[in-house]
Length: 181
Image 1: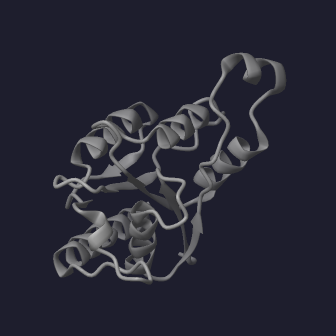
Image 2: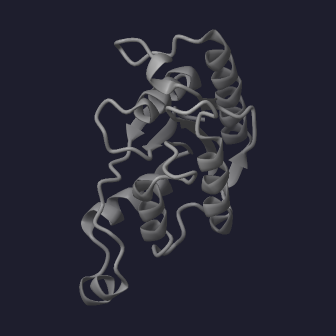
């Protein structure tokens, strides 16, 4: 197979968000792949606007990136014990696209948060939000980076060997899923 196409989606729009750092570390550990980072700075979903104007170009671009990716890594912060509104909005928009780009797509989910649980509730809500799309979710090892602002160096690289090892295993499982087809 040719070089894999890996798409990263961060549920935080901040330039130096730890979730952005986490998906970049995932891409590094995934290995040789063409990596693209999705832009989730999308307008809020509004069915009236969609009916009047169609999907915005930014949403069409995101759906296309998902469709052509061999695999997707998604990381969410935890906002009020749930996935971020930014990520939920993106999922809502993409759910409207035909054909459905998530169908059968290998996807690994993870989280990074300031709290001591590392966003595990957000990750659970993300899995629930993804289930209707029928991707091939890679389950475990769970990556929930707690106290995330302390777990990355100035260049955004993970500094905790335990998280690094678990993320390596998750990326190996994701790559194997892509190779299986």
